[in-house]
Amino acid sequence: MNLPRVGLIVPLREEFTYVASVLDILGDTEENGRVYHRFVIPGTQDTGILTVVHDMGLTNGALAAHDLVSTFHVPLIAVIGTAAALDKDIRLGDVVIASEIIDYLHAAKATEDTDDPSRIRISIAGTHWKPSAPLLSYVQNFPDRQATRRKAEEWSTAALGRCRIEPGSRPEKAPVYHVGHVASGDVVVGSEAFIALLKNHDRKCAAVEMEAGGAALSVYQNDKVELMVIRGVSDRAEKNKTATDETLDIDGAPNAWRGYAVRNATALLMTLLAGPGFPWREAPRLPVPYEPRTPASPGANGTPGASSGASFGTAAMALPAGAAAALAAAAVIRHHHRDGTPEQTGAGHVSRSPGDTDTNADERHDGSGQPAVDHQPQLTDHHGPVTEQHDPGLF
Image (cartoon, rainbow, N blue to C red; front, side, top):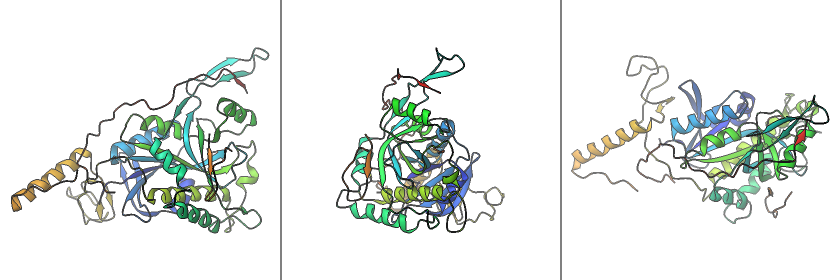
């Protein structure tokens, strides 16, 4: 079993229930106090790893991204969940993929309002992060290329077909996905004035959420890791979201729009990952030794379920880089002693509606066979400059 190719960050348990309803979950394990769920990327032989943060905020997103990369050496981190739309052309149930992530509270400045000292003004500076050009190009062109156009259409049609929102509230049109700027910060947004502040800072803001900025900060320090932010739109950051939250599904459960949005985002992510030509970054594809040991069976140290590596049912999970490399080297040595020959080793947001052309238009918001490489983070500055917005908002 190879190392997982993608690490998913899911903020809340509710969102995990929706994500898990789409994925084929193989099992779970605990490493250093964090629980991970392994899943299959549909249509491939690759797997991914998922962790639920159980809380909101940039710091939690940063820690989760760091743990996924340091533990499993995934070449891709994906932040998934709900978001609030900031663009009137984005419908509930649509999906937004970030072409730029804006940590809008970074270096923000608070001052008294000169007309009313009891109120404050916020001057937003912010830090902007971008995915790589190959990833952005892949996502933007996916609905238009001959090899992937049908996959995008099938995703959209299937999403509407599995919508579980009660009759009378169901969307009439199938969802589409948008590629645009996503604002990220430790604020639950439910204010038209605050939305205006965000749009004044960046008029291309398509959605707002609360974890991507932290994950971006963590990932940018490692040039072997890519970041994708993919969010289902469940509301419009209204002050009162009662009507949206109380919309029922066909089983009579509330938060039907949240479930619909996250399922759409999850299915789209899997479709993109399984598509031909996905721009995976180079990463070690070290084999992990197979351990036919159930969680209840005694491990090497006599402790029930204990084994070297993280266990998922009957298969050992990813080992630390040093241990995995040592095992791989040992396998080569054994092969050499067996036949005298060492084993060779291979060395502005865009609405994406299938068949359409580009338009400017939350509250929570390959096995490559390469040899092992150095996993030490390398600091590379690929995010945009910090610029202060001199037109402060009042709230």
